[in-house]
Image (tube, rainbow, N blue to C red; front, top):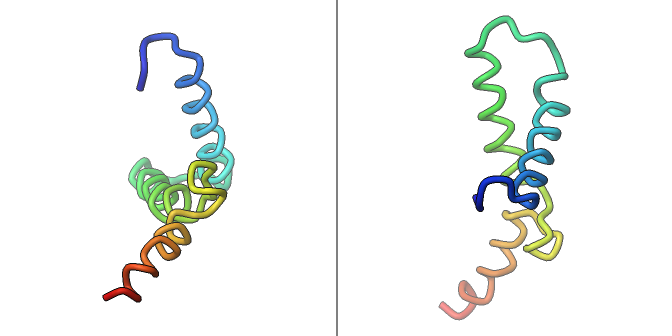
Length: 77
């Protein structure tokens, strides 16, 4: 992250936490912190990192990007 008070950093984190709240926190009531912790980690690892389309990758998911980028190398080998 950048310097204290950097608007770009704040916007990125606000966006992340808004998605987290909409997709995990507000879906149901959690009976324990441990259940919520596991749900958050699962959402981040399964959805946010792997299935979310990213502008830097040409609107592809990380899995799609890796697949398209690794195909020429696999064919050359």
